[in-house]
Length: 212
Image (cartoon, rainbow, N blue to C red; front, side, top):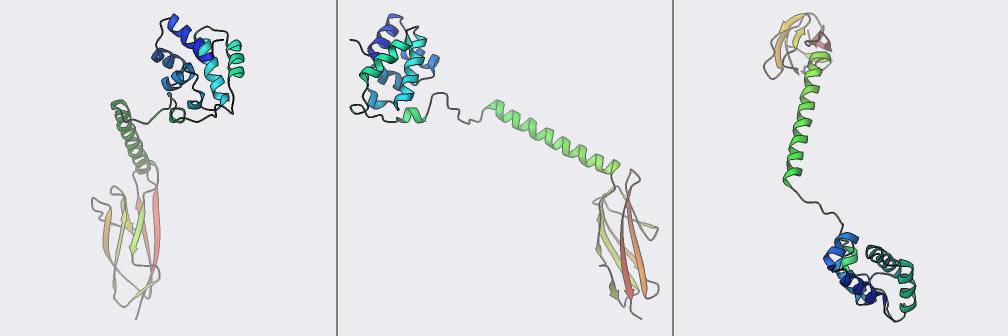
């Protein structure tokens, strides 16, 4: 009686099909197909998977898959043919591997440009709608000095208007500002505001004490 492997091989050759064609259609590697046709079950994965191979192969060849499986169960013996997982099984034919292609590279560039553009829009929106960024580096709050002049330093948005106690001061192209302020009396409150194009303002208050 012919084995499952002989039946599959004979039918494939009768239909003038090559193993490469069967491999492409069934997604079963050529090495596994060869082992199956030669009844070399020791080169194949566990029986459950082998039955799946037989089913797919038989269906592709328009054979009676139930009959093929019945023959396989009769001829196969776990004791005589211990299953062994092949490298071909651990690397199936349809396993996808990451490869850098021109289309992927172009897609990455386009994605980067889109992200950059969105960041730019967000920054512009913040300038036009939101209150500007304002940081006063010096003096610190509740700063005490014996000097009648204190230097106020900080940073804001380049296009914002900065005022110290309602007096406008200069801001450089990077948004930095530095201004000397005269102190009057022992306790001096400094109110620093930064107003953006939207009309919204950020405000920082500092208290500076002058020693007599």
